[in-house]
Length: 107
Image (cartoon, rainbow, N blue to C red; front, side, top):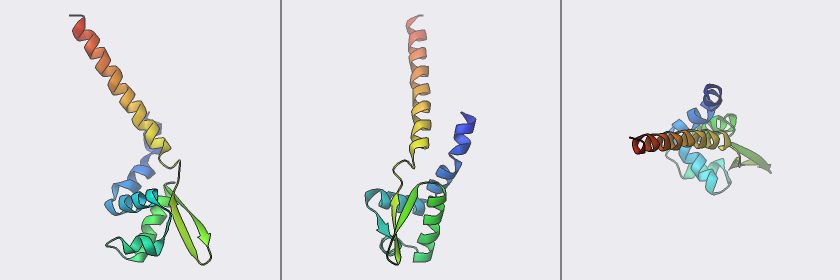
């Protein structure tokens, strides 16, 4: 599982920043250009662009060109690795709980 966790580092690092999380969550609702994203945030348009670069490098967002502007959207499978990791972790927790219940019942 260690290799799986290290492969999640870019995703977790990107989402660790509250402003980036807010940008990502906005893009999960609807595809948007930088200007529209920036209008809803307390940071400058260049700062939003920097956040989008980090999110893009982490595989969480992508864009399509429309004329002279880019429209950003959340990548459909961007969180797949994180979801898998959490599912495995949760499965381990449930297995541990079941083992503890079995042990308690066997006393």
